[in-house]
Length: 457
Image 1 (spheres, rainbow, N blue to C red):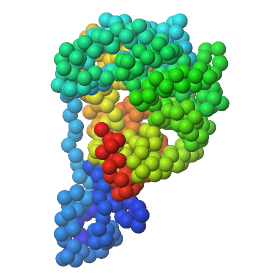
Image 2: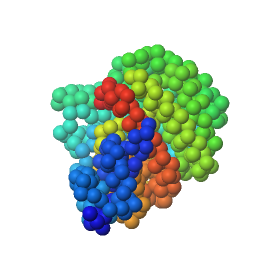
Image 3: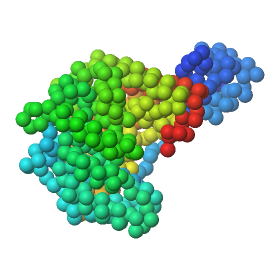
Image 4: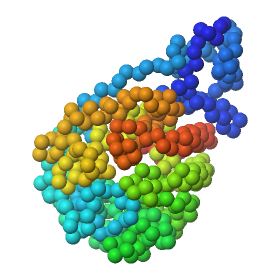
């Protein structure tokens, strides 16, 4: 049979060899298939434009069903139309004030506590009402408290929780809460209140004292580590039945993720640790260099090996960066957008403006309406459609396009001046990282498939 009758659609598959076996990562569905010897050999023949035998036609038909063989090299997808915004997560930026003055902070509206803007209960209440109105058919909702340092406006948080509990429970619906905090304002009383209110916490902390105190400082320049570590110990003692995560910002020159991990996971006893590499901050001085990024991803892979080994034993080691990606692969995610901002998530500033996400609060980028006038659905839909249907970029042919979807809106905004463009300055590193995540999924699936039942909701 002539090979000229068939075209391989190479943009729809990627081959990985793991433990002497060959696997096909099916890009359109983010699925993984183990290739038989016959299928692997046929694929190589087709790639080398060798003739196909009659016996191999059945496998060719299977390739057709997967859309890796077809009449065209590139299969055009219909443009995505976005008219509904069923958000299940609401971010309330309850204050612009913070008692720290972290050197790399991206928040455009950040102020000291003395000069902070505070959200009112009326704005918060109206935001919750609008939040439900936009997506009244869900069974579970969540509210995230953000700042500044959200605990500096704890009285409002207590009012919001009391109102939201009554509001959603009266409708027979579930409501959950989360918060990102620098931990400096935690007291025994505050911790107990948050625990009783079932508020999930993420603590911003950048590693051992020598690293943390370089960037996470008070206004007078004094490091905050001693206070944070002391409060974290009290927090974890009370939050024994709830996971508290650590969020680490990696800045220029800070690449020893294993040392940071060991300190946070084993010295301070965080159950989960995630890393946020700074690649497109306002101040380029803090952004990781290309060589820094390579070291960071090498460190991620080292932690990833531990994740894999523990998963095979039936344990979750707490490395959230890899865990989230493995979840996407397991669930066969197909992203047209990089995250839920604007669709699954709405963010409201302390003034009542509706922003794409909390990272845009206070920035020069236009808001998408406000609490008083409502969500500007036309403008938001237009923006999201432009990003979802972006053409003429290398993303269209990239093997991780459905897991990456072009990267963070805010990174794009800082890097290119618009969130409508894909982030393209570390694509090779991301492709290698996703390849590792696919390999991790395959190795765990082969040796302990129960891990996914146990730890994936």
